[in-house]
Amino acid sequence: MARLRTTVDVIATVLVATAAGVLLWRTSETEHARGSEPRPQVERLDASGLYTDLVDAVTKGDPMATVVLIEYADFQCPFCKRFAKETFDRLDQRFVSTGLVQYAYRHYPLAKVHPVAMEAARAAECAFRNGRFWEMREELFANQDDMASLDWLELASRLGMDERRFEQCVSDDETQRSLDQQVAGAERLGVSSTPTFLIGARGQDGMIHVLTRIRGAYPYEVFEGALEEVLASAKQAASSVSKRRHG
Image (cartoon, rainbow, N blue to C red; front, side):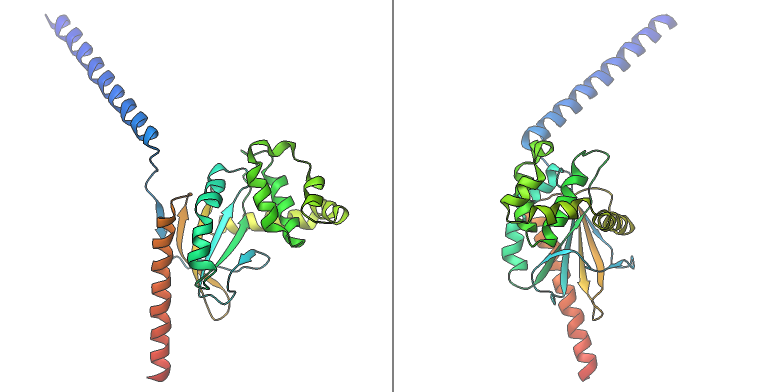
């Protein structure tokens, strides 16, 4: 009798576990079919004491804007491409081109998982030094699935760059040092994946006080809400300083 009970208990446990597994699989399949995203990782970092600068960063927008959005990205990262194609232009129109926010790009090539990421970063860095970053960015994302077959010199020439100067740049130790410094700086700020975005307020000394971190290529509305929040805080802080000066 005891042996029978044990057998029944085992069968019941297996059936429950199987049913739970099927339910979880069906739920996951449903969420995947709907294209659901994980919950946005918007982190407030006001008390973290993290600061950075924009030395040698690719920037767009008003250099005196009180709020800065810094992107750390990898040209072989599909989510970086998604942000570039689906979200960046809307943020540019709403915040960057209107002078509310300055945008900055930093390299964070994940060389261990993306074999051409570092080459692409060097090409983009050298395009930046030749005034062709945005054109190179568009080409790299457009050819992301076939990036390993790109002829860098031909691409540089097609984008209007001097081939010899570009070739010297991509093979220059200084270019690699610049990328290594960007990676080290990113990790100091808690960046470990791409794309990662930092939103900060510019101080009078030009340093950026990091206030918010977003990990992932979320829809426009996530970035809009985070930027609006920091803009409101910056406006309130500026108002308080003005009152104290004239108080």
